Amino acid sequence: MERPDTGRLHGVSSIFYKIYIQGRGCYVMSRGSELIREQLIRRVEEHLSEAVKAAQTAGLSAEELHQLLNLFMEERNDD
Image 1 (cartoon, helix red, strand yellow):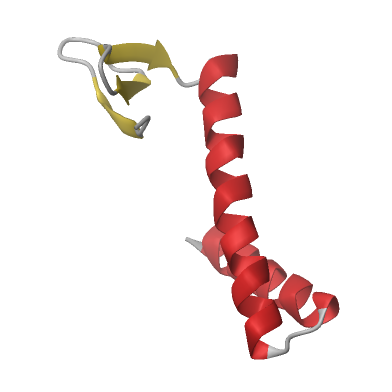
Image 2 (cartoon, rainbow, N blue to C red):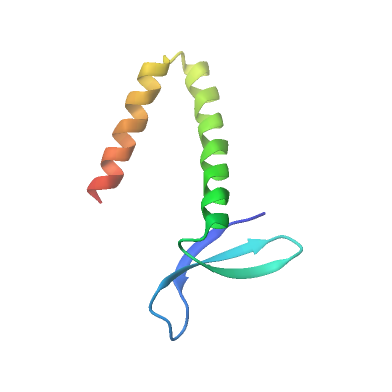
């Protein structure tokens, strides 16, 4: 499973991502990497799919789900 982690490379001050790919090992990529962005978008899509299923089960409308997402985004921006 791919899992990006942020951290600092010893002796280097820039932020990087460590990518673990099962059966392939660990790779270090810069934060601006397009591959990292694609992987993170896939993770977001997976989590949003689960959120939509849960929202439908709870009887939330699309508007209510959008409001929740906006609330979470605002809270995150305040950090």
